[in-house]
Length: 431
Ligand code: ACO
Image (cartoon, rainbow, N blue to C red; front, side):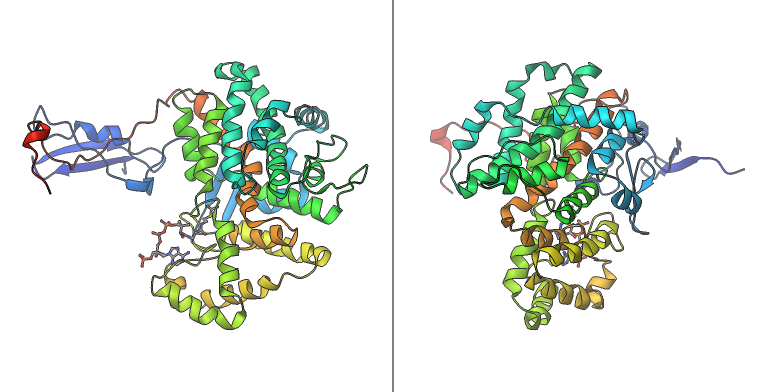
């Protein structure tokens, strides 16, 4: 009769241990009983970058990286992108169910009534240099929100947690748009709550002197889709930062500042920016083969390719590629698309990329869409942070309510010098 256990024999002592297997995992703490002597600390796991460690149980997002499947709360991403709005999806991610009409109306009302930011935050934005990276601005300002809403520290009060969710989902687009307007020297465009979430975002970005901004329906829908695709992605680097920092029971603004900082890096949310810079550097279709050779020689990465989890085509990249065509019809063709398509074509048949299962990820085409909407490249990671805010909050709340979670505190293998005598300055020899 097969048992859901793992039998481990410690060849140092000859002793055997039977360890339970649950949900395809063994508990790292069950290894601690494996010791060579009474005063031995016990066996640990070593897993730099958590490549094979589950850090939580989660009901939010499911990914099957080999089959290219992504689901939020059980709903396929393709269906949500086709039929839902971003706010409906955010409700689903936070509450576990799609809203009925009454709940959706209430939810949208609550978000829309938190879109304004305190006037002092405008002064904070004014203090940044005109060429400050908007991601650096965003993470500072989101962190600063903590000082405007000290009640947010009551993280075990469900009403207070919900209030911060409304504030964050509502205010992050306003802050992002204000950062953009600051960088281009335009006056801030205040939220228009008669517009949809994404229509209002377009308004705050692009309103000029007209009395009422009218978002183009194709661009409005493109943002809905892009926001849905970026809403959550289980335990990635920034979500791990959100949970890890949040595990100290800090308020969600401070934790989201940390998550935003993690997203800023070029290996994560900064990749869409890096893709655009790479496409510009390649310049034309003719230069693609030489660029691919350089990547293969290890002289840089093909940005927007590869993923820790997806070992086939990222399902989000497929949807974005289709959306890109619709946006280009409105905004005009993007000459860099030709370079991107050629890079993809060559890479997908090159042994180096095929054998390593490197496919386009979400960032490969999203930057082209943002660029054709006339957004500067350093706004691209900000465009990722806006929709991910709901995923971060949902993951944080799940962590706060999970009785198994404690302050995140990994172990290490110490490899420094053993204890030694402190040398007074006069006894130290020059190098
Ligand atoms: N270009 C060229 N080679 C690559 C790339 C790439 N984009 N990605 C991985 N490889 C190679 C590595 O050099 C390595 O080769 P080796 O086995 O000969 O040493 C192999 O593929 C495995 O790569 P790892 O770095 O071990 O893969 P990991 O899972 O750690 O990294 C990551 C995933 C960070 C996304 C990586 O693929 C990468 O740097 N991609 C480019 C940046 C990017 O697009 N990031 C966005 C990710 S999606 C997101 O965050 C929203």
